[in-house]
Length: 262
Figure 1 (cartoon, rainbow, N blue to C red):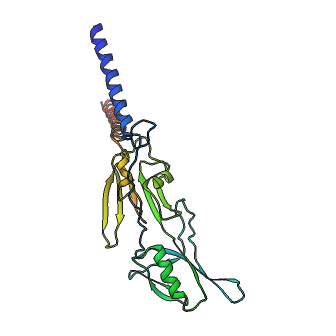
Figure 2: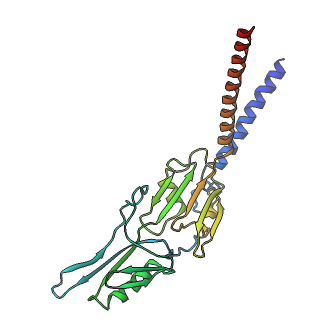
Figure 3: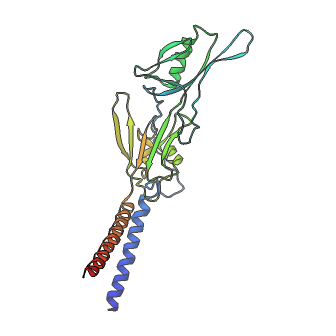
């Protein structure tokens, strides 16, 4: 009897040790980086400026200096949503139509689809130069929105403060992954210029994520963190307990009704 008890204790301890080792390998980021003071080099994917697409909302400011050197603002539009917070208001700005065009006062229609922000500023400056003296143009995204869902602390949509946004920036704004989030299989959904959608799985446990072409995010990217097996199993156990309680209640009720009947 004592031998069986010892065997049972050793088995339970072994299972707990192995399970804890398995969990410790899946929770940390970059767990394949050696634990040493010696730096590990990883090739970073080059950053590419996102291009403007139809349905993008642009905040455009055009300023000029007249003969008296007084700053005159021709047009100013700013997004109402604060950077880095959940978008709860409809931002203002110039909406790029289905043909990739915007229409500005005095300047008229300009095609911006397919251009970067820097290229769009130059295109607007050249168009405005016909009507204003040395115009200064500033263009920003008014709806550079990233959505993070699933096993994160604060799932929501976030308006980013700039265009150079990494997947870890977005996850950080969502409060990081919960202990139940799968770090080795993060789902990314991305719109493309040809009206298609790319779907890809990313492994945040590996340092290779830095060299991934999806390391830098694009406007309207959606990130979904699926639950791990522990969360799914705990959910199933909870459901089983609920169904068990319901079953016991039905059995008790049936027994009571049977006794009352007889």
